[in-house]
Amino acid sequence: MGQILRPAGSFIGEIMKITRRLLLTCFFAIAIAKSPRIALAQGPPNVVTLTPPATITAKPGAVAKASLSVTVAEGYHANSNKPLDKFLVPLQLTWAPGPLGATGVAFPKPQTRALGFSARPVSVFTGSFNIETTFKVAADAPPGATSVTGKLHFQACDDRSCLPPRTLEVVVPVVISK
Image 1 (cartoon, rainbow, N blue to C red):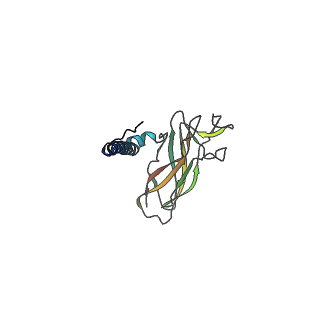
Image 2 (image 1 turned 90 degrees about the vertical axis):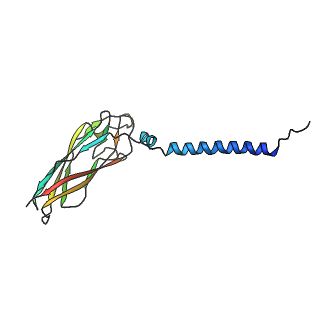
């Protein structure tokens, strides 16, 4: 039985068609992967929001207080500042050095809940709550407008799983009076 032979041009033409299809498939796959709409749709939901304190007005050398309002979306919680399991990420509020130095951060009393992803109860914050910070104004702080910046680091979860930890920037306007 004889073999059927194709002309070389026909064979090369088919290879070129397959190569073009493969290149087009790769091009569209890369374009879809880099699409901003798709990337945004895959990101974690923003379930924790904050309202920075109003402007702090204080004199050099004085003590000032500020209240940061935090809201956790319904159906979610944030681990407390003192989680009961060491593998959970605590809620932390830190402040950068500047004309005001944080001397204390006070968190509300957390709730203890039994949740599906943990065999033990979990210490959490839910709904809206405030975090109070006490600042000491530097004795040599020059009068005028400035700001103090901080970071709120947390891990939000629902009753089955946790989202990746996040950090939100906090900027508080400050007026140092004479």
